Length: 125
Length: 125
DNA sequence: ACGTTTTGTGAAACACGGCTAACTTTTAGA
DNA sequence: TCTAAAAGTTAGCCGTGTTTCACAAAACGT
Image (cartoon, rainbow over all chains, first blue to last red):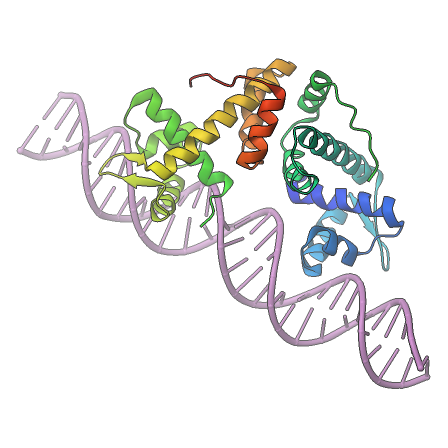
């Protein structure tokens, strides 16, 4: 089953939070994304069924498959946020808006765009 | 009421079709966007309630308010499609994907991005 | 170790934006 | 002009992704 925009956001947030704090719980994801824990619970069930995450007793972690998507999303996130910041957009706004841009392109198009613009979007967290 | 992505798409398509053919009917919008005429009918009712379009007996046209949004969307569309094409993405794909990017940014951020990238996105239809 | 607080889940509802199907209205051709 | 085709509307459904509310389960402090 294909991943939707919201699924990609959940995976990305699990990735970011795991870099930041190691163990990630549903409640952390909920706070990070600004949704209710019920929403996270439902989303995690779907993502688990599709092999993107695994749920422990009290933590969530990405599978290989989920990690791949998450890394890709995070890379794009950094790219677009950096691009907007360079254009003079505030970090705050760039972060919000980059969040949506990262879901628009295929991997192929993204790579082409990145190589044309020649940016190194290598940042952490 | 805030305009959603789909609402912006409808306005943009009315704009493009009106440039192309003058009078625009619901069925034209349906064909252009690849949705059913029932969907267009529903969307037009909402857009009319919110003052973006006016429905004549057998045509739809943009109000001032709708026109402003539509022009803006079209401008962005051309910008992103052109950018992707320059990066080496096929017209086909650039067109599909640019379609989504155009909804991600605020007007302010878009202007900043455009002036940084210094592209003239002045094309017709 | 017990009770409180925190975290997670399940059910029901909602908004959105599509769809089909059935219907009405308009247009246009023979 | 009258009938058939085209265009538009309405009603009802579906999937997605939220929400709230109630409850279950776990963790934690004293």
